[in-house]
Length: 215
Image (cartoon, rainbow, N blue to C red; front, top):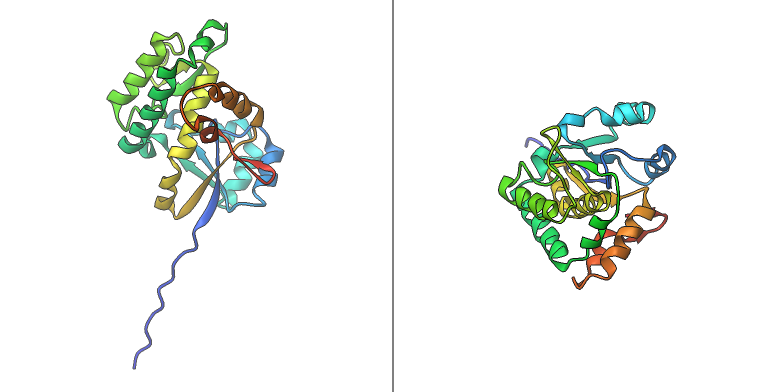
């Protein structure tokens, strides 16, 4: 009687899903983080796909060599469903008025790719988010055709929300995406802003802590 072949199921990996930007700020933090995870996942738009190698070539090259660096493309994974969740969350926060005070401060705006705002998933919804922010002085028209200048705290809010919204996409690469950040001060400031919002449970959406790693 012939032997039956055993089906081999690859073990699901747990990846540290870095936020709120396309590249980490602390190389030493990444070196420590990789001791606890099976790899690092970054959400990097196509037009800056080489940024990890430019910002921190030594660590990026080392992670790539060992198969530990996973680049997630917002053009693909910030789909219609993800854009809808992002639009719902952002609409609620914007409508609460909690972000209005940010427009009064003289702050240098930072670019957020339109793909991470959901431009490829649902262009109409992404545009609605942008127009709502622009109306309140929190975003400006694109200068390069691929990104939107935005108040840094609002930009961070979008990226923090995406870190949670996109977690289910880990299944497509047989992985568990665990949001992690090396910028707890920024997340803390964002949580403080949202803590006075009438939206229920807004604070825990942006930050929770596990061990020594901010997630």
